[in-house]
Image (cartoon, rainbow, N blue to C red; front, top):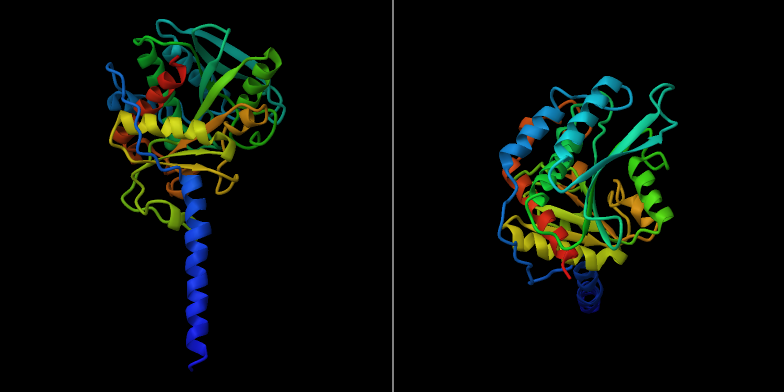
Length: 331
């Protein structure tokens, strides 16, 4: 017994040292704690009622909209185009062919609202508008599109110091995900071919679902992140850590909505949206999300309905993104 106790003590001490010297620094590196904030500039804020109205329309009358429902898809494109056509925005369609769609349904479009010019640095904010199968897709991703439409309204009434492109992407969901037929892949490729300089890309992927308690299947996520699901997440690679920190400070200055960040290896679905296609061209990009399937049990089901979303907190997410965009565009 006398020999065992010192051995156990040494093991525990070694584990404690490992945790202090390795785990805590690694945790801090990927979480990027910051006390600094970027104040929200005076002016209009996102309207929860407008966000609700967009989501209810997109996930209601216009649902389901994807390549298998061409009439609904066409109506959705018209709706988004109309709502992006605000003062100061130059709206255009970017057509492309998605070969994985059925014959006769392969012509797809991205919808682009440009504030500013095609010259100089640009901040891209994007969200996909297609849904999976016959599901309504309130959180995935009517929430992201509603955020994009509200950003257009807010940007139309603010002074801006540079160029912003708001992009609604087609064909993000399977059978297109991970191929060059994703709408975001087409847009990112076009930027690369034109030699466009991208200051940052911000992807809105499921931004409306919040709950009191969030369960994680992974012990390291449980260790690193809050146990409640009342926060927004900023997700990127290690290379995007400075962008993530800028966005995080902007969120903190925009509202009291808690925000966390992850910058590290592509794990836990960190690349499962449109930002991935900008990484391929060396553009800095992060995803803003409510953590999708890690939190929302209605992900890719018929229960992903407008009534399940929290529009007050969703508006705070939009304010954070607006503040980040204005900050990134400032001299």
